[in-house]
Length: 461
Image 1 (cartoon, rainbow, N blue to C red):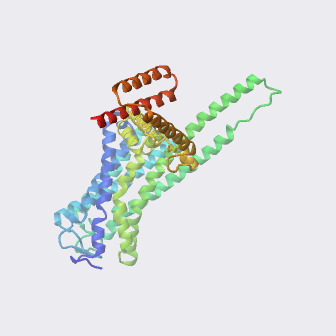
Image 2 (image 1 turned 45 degrees about the vertical axis):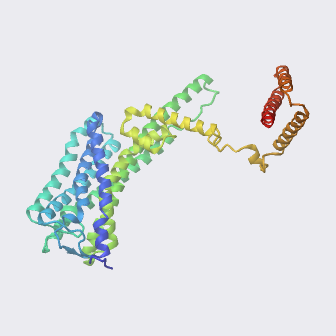
């Protein structure tokens, strides 16, 4: 299937697919870098420094994924036809290939992160002991990444791989596949195996620890025949506190293991399809569009997935603490914890005002439920309300008609008569102000009387 400009649909899709994922990854990685560099306590943490290195390496590769085919030399072609939006030159392709090879630092940093979790949880290493091996966590990824990238650049191995530039010399050379596997895909699969092994070990350790805790600190009430009641209760409470303390420590270790496992899962998802694509090339000598599309879409998303996992512990903590807050408010608190109390107070006061406003207008009750009148609930609303309302209205209308008929029979042709009527009305008001219904009726009479006087005076004139 071809487009009107002569490019295949597959070519257009592969050129456009990495743009949005790469931007999301760039934004996420930049946020992690800013978050670590702006907080002194994070700069002093090994975990956050490892995340800083991982995010920097992701920024270097994600901006290349975003530029994509723009850096490929003009007029290039591949297994799916001519390359769409190929505006680059030989030099831009070399630039793209160099930073694509630097992407190997991300898998190696993921291994460093897994080993950190292993030593911290499995071996029980403290922060001071981990600082002694921390330089290796950074040196190995950086040395290997820059060493292979420079070697490939010196050997002029970079070329078009259809949606970006990497090790694929033009014209193709018989040795380039060996460099592809030894410089990138071989180390990637070694990293996957190491991380899976570490995570399986951590999960097994956590499961074993939980079973030991449940067995050792299971509460067994001693018999009151041999132990006084006061001593029995004291021991039970002490045992509970001890078990609770150990359970909390076990839960903390489990949360760390879950956090590390999520990083491994994201790494495996993003790097699985690129390696499958290369295996299919070696085995069958051809590219499959479905696998290539998943490659170009998922590989640039690693930084975005990383920032979601990075923010997950704080988000879950604030969500448990403030279950009524919106996602946006919680993200603002994560961004700046100093404004936590201010944002919570503002949100709840605004929510309270809105609820009160809805309740006063009859839209909602104070509990947030629709304020449905009783007449509507009983189904008696029809042409003026319930039977009782209609009875009251009919009685009032009869009273008004009766008063009007009495007023029309009174002589009101002279001003003296009008004065006497008004004075009588005033006396009646003074006498009967204690009765609300009488006041309402007399008030009605006064109003009707005044209207009748005005009308009559208008007729006389």
